[in-house]
Image (cartoon, rainbow, N blue to C red; front, side, top):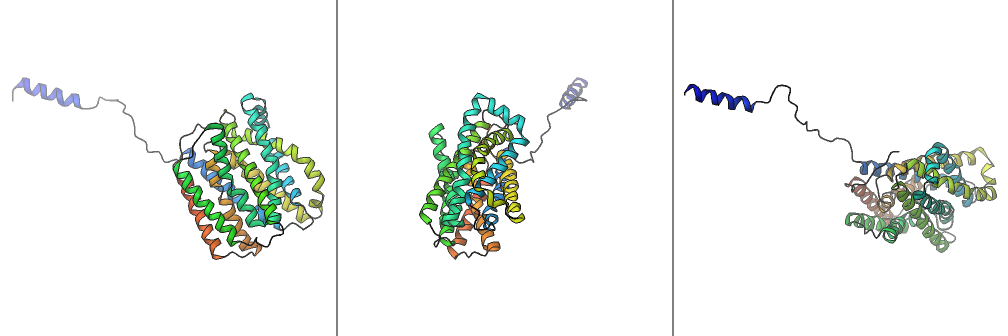
Amino acid sequence: MSTRACSKAGRRRSSSQPPTGARYPRIVLATTPSPGNQGAWALVLASLLWGTTGTAASFMPDDVSPLAIGASTMAIGGILLFLVSARHALAALRNGASRGWLLLGAVGVFVYPLAFYASMDLAGVAIGNVVSLGTGPLFAAMLEWLFERHRPALPWVACTAGAIVGIVLLALGGEGAGAPAVVPGLLLGLVAGLSYSLYTYCSSRAIRTGQAPRGVMGGMFGLGALALLPVLVLFGGPLLQSWSTVGIAAYLALGPMFTAYLLFGIGMRTLRSSTATTITLLEPFVATLLAVIVVGERLAAVGWVGLALILVAVTVLATARQPRSRTVSP
């Protein structure tokens, strides 16, 4: 090989080598879960707490009204939510874009606990619980279509259909057929489901205006708490009859209300209300298990099939890849 050829080959080899100190982009594999899945699992944890409400309330004496239980749970918990997020809550209430959603959602916050606990009292814990929570996804999808013309995705339809079949089987297999007033209890369950989906939808819309989730929860539930205080004053006297009743009321306010709705706010940062209400169908699953294990209620074979359907549907939806959604700071 000639000297000139060797020189050219050397230049080609040297040009193919990376220059000293050159920087190239580094490929990093994402190992952190997506915001959508984080929100889904926050709702799963909240549902576990909500599932304890029926069992805890069942230990209340007969002279404690379900209205007192509902009012104390939401009023005390709502005030706490407002206090821990006062600055953000006041900002959300002052903001014109989010104020209307907070006011509308507060109506749902006021109605839901009264209808929910009264439904369980009249129709039985199992039926009242599954009707109240089971109709939530349907009402939420209706609200999304009414306000946004949003059509639900196929995975949501499939998972929600499976979960609703599960809660129907759960209600058929539970002890509720001999309840004193099943039909009024069912109607109140429908009211609870509508009010639950209402404040769920309104919270997601308020968060999408750019408000912090904690501030939205604090503002909405703070307003609902103010409306519930007169109900608590009228019916809440028997809650003070013993340390046991005070302890149960405190647990319901601090656990299934205060802590669970902080988790609820995290979930609503990234999830649509229809998806959130489907994931929280895990609550009747937990409530029924506790009723069987702790309270001593019996569940027929068809009810166990319903439990399995709910668990599968919620697990599939909670672990599915969620659509991208704008997140905001907590």
